Image (tube, rainbow, N blue to C red):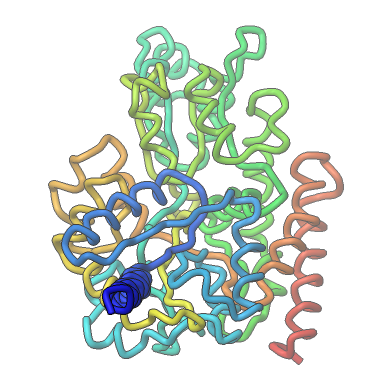
Length: 438
């Protein structure tokens, strides 16, 4: 009898243990993102959520180079390894039309997120198709391309005097693209191993596109008509051609070996005393104000992408929204996490940790704008951003841009007009293939 009781109790214990295990598993969420500092900040925020709710948050990361491939391999297999994903804005088309993302339109309306979040983040991180009122993500990590610069070089009295003598105006944060070019030329001194500017040139993913877009949009150019998918007369317009020429001109003043550069190299341009100015996503600026990672931290300043020749001022959008994956078995729990994430107090915590909030109220607050040397420039930029195509075939469009623009930018093949005419033809053929144009 005693052995029987012991056996029964052991069985109950096993059942309870198994039950606890299942319960613990249910009370957890896995978020998939790329491997970078903001993902670490999100894990810290997730730890706060666990303390409040008991629900464990795991932010699983993978290098940027295989983030898209790994995510869509899991999506296409209808796998439930991840409950949420912080996906690139360009994924919205494929994520929604492929059935991979949960429709968040009702959630958006219930919480009035169209007014809570900065307009550009709603348009580019959440809505697909454009102007449809259908939402598939919650704006999470706001980001765009901005600039860092060496304040000590700019403020040196001898440099200021020499610059004014040569160009006829004061050396300062560039007020437009012409000044950006002049300053890059002025500080280009190969014999001193000092160079004018660092820009994006890598053609393996979206670096080249993001860099070129900063010139394109501020020169008044466009990628195309997002409603009709007409590209001829847009991506190869006179303004677009002038923008590509202007971007190529900046390449003349970069450090040697700058033909495959992206965010790592562009931060190194500042930390290693290579360039006077450097393009980069705002998400990579925190390390530039940290003396442990940037010996020039005290002498590093920041500014928003400057206007073009006609006063247009925009920047290429980075950043991501967070989506609930339709194959997750924990969608209800995921929605609770999103409800917590969008609260004002959570958004303030997110910003304090180093995440780039998309909350319009937090962005506009004096506390946020004065919190770091780059927050004000970030605030100014996030209301002046434009994005790449977010259609399901965006990867093909991106590859075509890289194949056309890179040989001209780096190798000097052809002219800007020939390059963009060829790109317009490529894109038109791609949109025809997918039935978007006749």
